[in-house]
Length: 314
Length: 238
View 1 (spheres, one colour):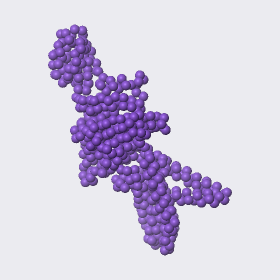
View 2 (cartoon, each protein chain N blue to C red):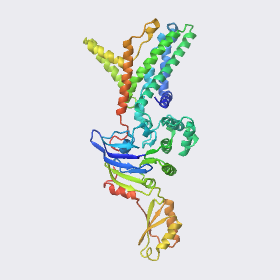
View 3 (cartoon, rainbow over the protein chains, first blue to last red):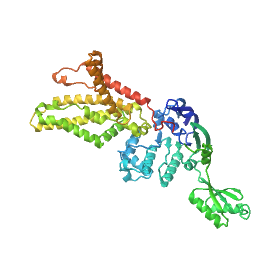
View 4 (tube, rainbow over the protein chains, first blue to last red):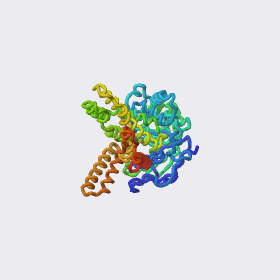
């Protein structure tokens, strides 16, 4: 398996007036979870469109496992969830999954069971499966879309804003499913604005801006300590009466990690909001005088903000 | 051809309330002359042109405008298979409606005490099936060109243009223009008249060739248009 190779990819719209991609080159290894981030209009969805063979690049080349992206051999092992999910609204959820099961050329015997299993996998019950798609909420649509993208355990999964419009439980489910996909060795290309999610699930991230890859970040995939908190104490406390050992013990009790002590500040990594609350409680219980706690933006957030024009995303 | 697309298209077309109303109305209206004059047999039933249009309108364009085509073509399905499957589904669906229409007509004729000519019914069915496949091929091309139900608009415009040009040709006695518009009209409504078979006359080879070439050309152009189509909701590099 070769993975995905993108060489000097360029794409324009409106007879060359709008340059969506400008010489993008990337290599995505088999089994890698690769994130694409960037402001609106940066070219992320265009890049995904070229990877899926929906758009023809003006210049450059894309190959997946050594094949053209629209090769049926590639499509037979790919799953795709578009950002603007428009499903066949007249179908029921179960019928829709059975339809895509057939389109994916998966074996007909056991198709109904496979459709039901796919519904269950994304947390949709039998009643939801029997309901016409036009009566689905945004979150249910997204779950159904994810279920169809994962039908047949594809080797390549292309996800465009998969957690968009999904409730917190859905976000957790999405992360768990992505973990499963990664565990079985599939390659995932994830286009998302939800930087905390990208930071948690991706091995590498490309920051795309004005059609170019401006930066690449290698992340610690599956990091559980996704947020960093800065704790400030009154002068003379941290680094003085509060020792590093006290801070480490309090952090350990709260399931957090002490990252750095720079009086009067200490930096801790926590998993989520609940972890942050536990940490503050543990610090107070340990007699640490806490004057202020502020969240620190993640690596991707920093990357995003540093790469942004002053006016913010377009 | 992909059976899943054929079946899904048939289900979609026959569960659309608007299309169903049009189909039922068209079938009942076609039965009125039979009811009034059962002795005339099946000859009083018009052709399936409007039935075919009701089922074919937006056959590809609606998938393009709704965005469902993107998800479908992310699957191992070629655009040629997609166009052919849609064509067969729509033409096959029209043929099924024609069969139902003829059975109802036969029932009306029998109930009114007239004799049912099954040979006539078979020829009418053959005529309509050929027309259904012809119209569906034309609509597949028009539907590949424009999104939504724009194919109906294109067809109407094309017919209007041929009428105007034909009238102009007739008025000015421009024979070439008249013949050209007649040819265009034949392209817009490809049919093969098999009624002469009732009298033992074979269909004209020229008519057969004209019908087959029109259908083939429309399908080939539809596939070409689809192959050139870029699928994206991004028009400006989102």
